Image 1 (cartoon, rainbow, N blue to C red):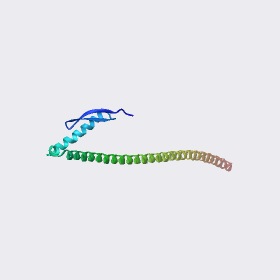
Image 2 (image 1 turned 180 degrees about the vertical axis):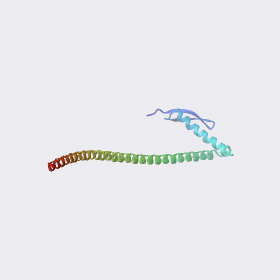
Image 3 (image 1 turned 90 degrees about the vertical axis):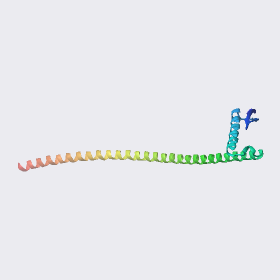
Image 4 (image 1 turned 90 degrees about the horizontal axis):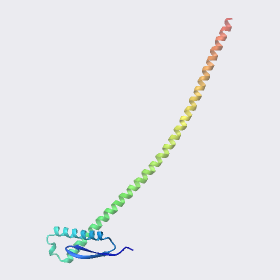
Length: 151
């Protein structure tokens, strides 16, 4: 359990003792926040010092509640934005995985097509070589036949 500490702070010109398990710095920040709120009221409300202390306290409480609600709204908005960003990130990752799978499939298809092309080219080259050989044989046969006919 955190150690409880007591800190003297000045709020609106009066010394108070704040106790809690928060750090001394945090408690001074709270006092500073309250002093700034009171100072803002003194600047905005011309007859602030003439108001009843209960009214002053109520105005301060309402203003602090307003700050709290605004910060909660911001937090909710940031949470929604974060959730949306996470959804978009998940979607992008999903799309990336799909694209990687498609790329791998396409690369395999390309390899198969290149292999088949090489096989077809080899068969074509062999066929052309056979045809040239046959053509040469036919020429030789024709020449020999022609020579025999002349004899």
